Length: 223
Ligand code: CA
Image 1 (tube, rainbow, N blue to C red):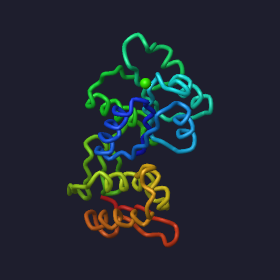
Image 2: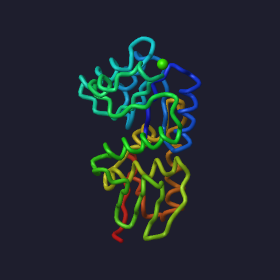
Image 3: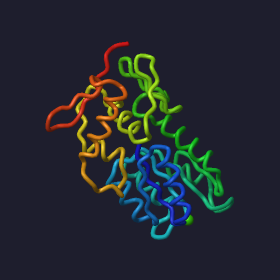
Image 4: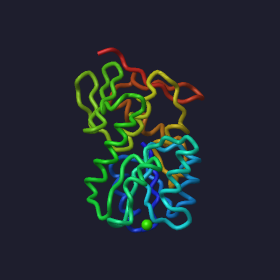
């Protein structure tokens, strides 16, 4: 899951990014509205966290521009204090939810997860992803195969979730990188192999098939 944070308060942006990264999200951060709109247009995000009072272009305008362009990425709006933000106006421009600062981190994460579930990749509101005998519980971040629970790191979970959401299809390394890593990573795409190897070791060698020159395909036998 890949998240864009558009927030000009750098300390807040940094702490949100660190927190969400620890939760297993790939996080990009920009500090003004113009960059925010550009990034959100160029890259496919699962969620955008958008401050309202921003230099360059305010959050309302960024949100309205994305919606006008047909971009349906869930948007969580942030505002500095009561009064600055007009809830009706925010929702009118197409935001999905809003949070008034200061907010607790726990509340933010809960809202983020709720929005992702609501707009969840086609699988309507279900936090659970099932492929054969593989079950991924996105809410509890638990993975079981044939009933046996396996403990995964945040990155392993992200790679598995992306492959499972496209089960049966070939997914390229570049695509996995785009969803599991942020712009700060500009290293070798072969890093993906490391995580796929770990997943095979933990969940069984037959789960993820290498498609030579193309990528990987997740296949799970029936339970
Ligand atoms: Ca601001």
